Length: 298
Image (cartoon, rainbow, N blue to C red; front, side):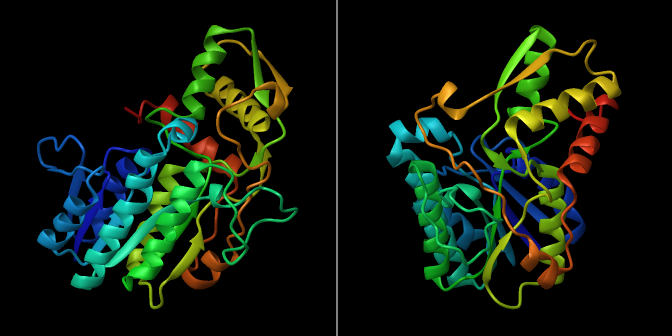
């Protein structure tokens, strides 16, 4: 099997470099195109589609996204190029070559007004440019005719890269007090598990195109996540002392982009169709922190 990984340097992309080689030959494309990689300009959608046609893989995994949620509000064209137009070109190329496309989307396609976990067929209503651009990407993939699996994930973090986990660890080592939003609810999801599950989906096969939610089980607030990070880091010896973690409201921390207040996703379909059970978010966090403490992360 030949697999083309688009976006091999992101949080999920770097973990996919670990899980995909067991499935076959992996060709990695990144913006920089370092040694052993292909260079791909994800701001030029047509060129990425041409890359897919040239490589002619059996499976394309699109781990590329414009994820700067606040910056997207001031640069919508850039967000839509990467999150909508590029997936459209990739999906059209997959349709032409017969490749299976795995494409990652987000909880931000929902408005956060639900009172129970969102199912795949619930009404979408993004609150900002980022969510709207990702939804447009989903719609383009579905309209392309390509065999596809759209995988919605949320609150992604990893032992590497810039993310909430590393921000909290840094601030906890510098400050005596942290103020963290407590009225946004979701499920922190490790990039490592997303990559593990993605490899299982490819191995299992996708008999019918569709959309699946790929997130950890359970739910918490950003404040609860921050407290759990600090608890785990203290236990693992990554922090020498415990700062106070104070809950604040979204209104106390205004941002350019609105965020969904509740974006827990239902993973029943994932378990039913692929036999994949989502780990509890706390278990996922424990594994990541253990890896950091053991020096397993770059």
